[in-house]
Image 1 (cartoon, rainbow, N blue to C red):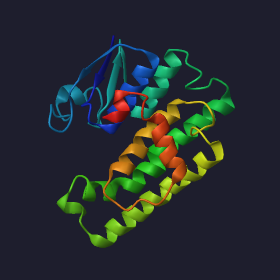
Image 2 (cartoon, rainbow, N blue to C red; image 1 turned 90 degrees about the vertical axis):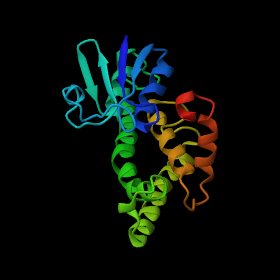
Image 3 (tube, rainbow, N blue to C red; image 1 turned 135 degrees about the vertical axis):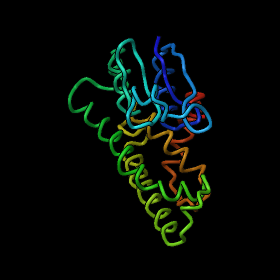
Length: 201
């Protein structure tokens, strides 16, 4: 039985939950994080010294970093439809997963903390405007890719890259900010909406 540590409201935990559902893997989940048990508890830090969710326990194996966990589970189950085994196909999927974790995530941090979390430390108007512009610009990169593929991030086939980016799209659409008209993203979001409860959360 897989054990997932992290609250279900976390976008990074939902990546792992969605992956488990795609793979039909049973799991047990424990609530850790803001509002629940603190990730600074020594027991949690022994598993992830970064004090971040999610953490996956698979027998003796302990993994953190949500995208790594998703890739591991797909490879563990031999699901080359979600994570190709050929080097070029796998690199394309991992490229977009790494872009999500790096470029896209870094673009939305200030605006998300200001507009959604209402953080008093993130209310500078100039930085907020720059944050919104940066977030929308990164979503423009995704819009261009989806216009090229006409379906999913890496082409016609749904992959694990769509799990991590689908949740990122949902976060962007739900944020109270001006959204450019990105029709390919809107169609992509509608295409994914039926997939899983982890996407709807």
